Length: 151
Image 1 (cartoon, rainbow, N blue to C red):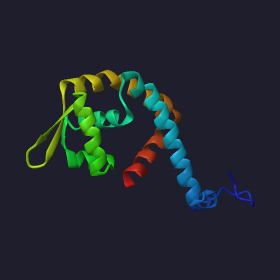
Image 2 (tube, one colour):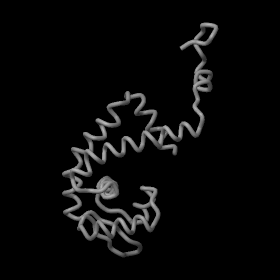
Image 3 (spheres, rainbow, N blue to C red):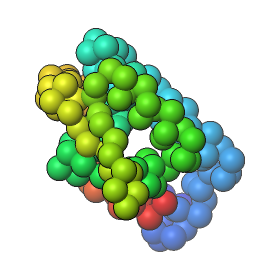
Image 4 (cartoon, rainbow, N blue to C red):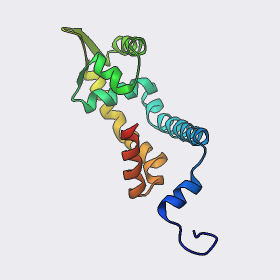
């Protein structure tokens, strides 16, 4: 890309000229999120008999070593107290997690929950790669990771 006079644009010049409207950028972000989310869930969670919230909680607990305080789990997911509580009640009935009260509520993966996340993980990894990371360069992945951590 060059400027009308044939010179290469300065980095700030190219960025400012090409910067989309903030609402358009937000809309594009939402659309990309919905498309990738839907495809990954369809490939991974649905086939394992898990809902998207089930999968989200199981992945988060597994990454944390199998147990988290309920308030920490909710905060890490950006969920409110009511949503996390109702979801954990459903998951407890299916014996995917347990909740214990002791200076707060601790949520722990059960054997069934560990089996579920272990079984779904290879398909989840493949789906995330197929519908998301394989479509990006290594530099784009690094940039996106940095940007998302800032939000």
